Amino acid sequence: MQQEKAVNADKGVSGNLSGGIFTGKKALILGVANERSLGWAIARKLHEGGARLAFNYLGDALERRVRPLAESVGAELIHPCDVSDDAQIDAIFEQVAQKWGGLDILVHSVAFANREDLEGRFLNTSRDGFRVAMDISAYSLVATARRAEPLMKNGGTILTLSYYGAEKVVPNYNVMGVAKAALEASVRYLAYDLGPSKIRVNAISAGPVKTLAAAGIRNFRTMLAAAEEKTPLRENISAEDVGEMGAFLCGPGGLHVTGSTLYLDSGAHIMAV
Ligand code: 0WE
Image (cartoon, rainbow, N blue to C red; front, top):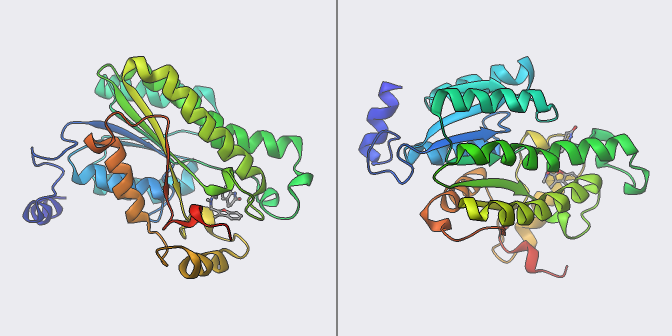
């Protein structure tokens, strides 16, 4: 940690320099699973800008992954939270309230659908599979935003992650596409509700990245190859790109931007084929 500070100080990006654009800002990052997670890429950028960080994890297996990462950026809070459980959401926000007495930034990088619902026909999605995907991937933004509002006394910013399957059919994305459509609509309604509290709410619609969430997705490598060949910029996006845009949106670059879903996809969304 000391060493990291010294190294970063030389680069002028230390989380402890008073000149960072997030100096003293308190950020809660939900949904980091490992070092490839998009939430982690955003957290790193916030840390470079001087933000103070808190993280959740889901279960013992992910705690072993998340804790060392969180500690490497001097996280002040590392707490379990299954976003499908209101009591656990209450508990982590209670921890944030006790520890910090406020919050400036909420990063929601959470999604889940049952594995069997990410292949075959969307038509066959069960009632419970639909509920699980909507609950964890969309409602959790509403549930966490509601707890964040009273802590964001000086205004704040909420950021979530979406995908183009919300708008157009991406084979196999299925119920996640429906959940992301609900998530993007939720971003707009939350932005309206939270605007008077000076809280901005936005989403990044990111192109495919090889994260844990993409592991085992059929044809994922084909999708990456297609993006590399067919997008206007002819290249895939990286987790670091998501970190950069996330930090931009959460920082002064995002001032007066709310309710928006911004594409970070090498231009994929402008193409007809
Ligand atoms: O939003 C996502 C993936 C979210 C996701 C991934 C999994 C895999 C493991 C949600 N739930 C689960 N459940 C599991 O059991 N992406 C944008 C990545 C993704 O997933 C796809 C994609 C892309 C792109 C699934 C099918 C087709 C394309």
